[in-house]
Picture 1 (cartoon, rainbow, N blue to C red):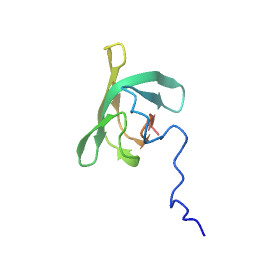
Picture 2: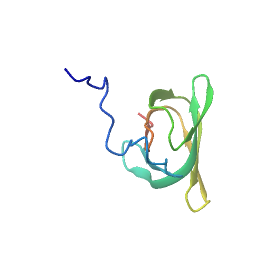
Picture 3: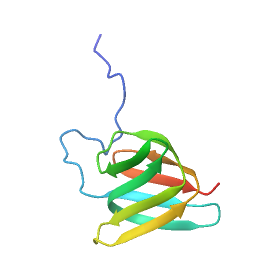
Picture 4: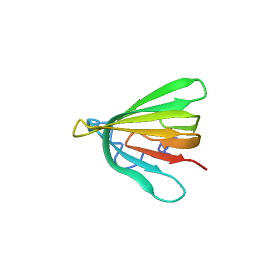
Length: 101
C-alpha cells in the first residue's frame, strides 16, 4: 500500500517553486476594504509585541491589539493603520487582516 502524505499542500505551495517576493494583503473593517494589494512586509501589533510578516511566513492566526499596522507595499510605499483590535490570518502567500470589531 503506498504511503499517503499527512497533509495535502495547496497547489501554490510547490516546494520546488521559489517563494514570491510579495504576498497578497487584505485589510478590512466592518464597513469597507481599507487595503487590497501586494505587500513586501507587514508589521502587526500582537499581544506579545510586534509580529513581522514576509512572504513564506509560517501559517498563523493571531489576535491584534491596539497599535499600528505597518504595510510596506510592492511599489515601496507605506501604509499605516491605527487599530484598536482585530485578528489576522497569515499564510505563506496571503495576509487577511480584520480590524475594529
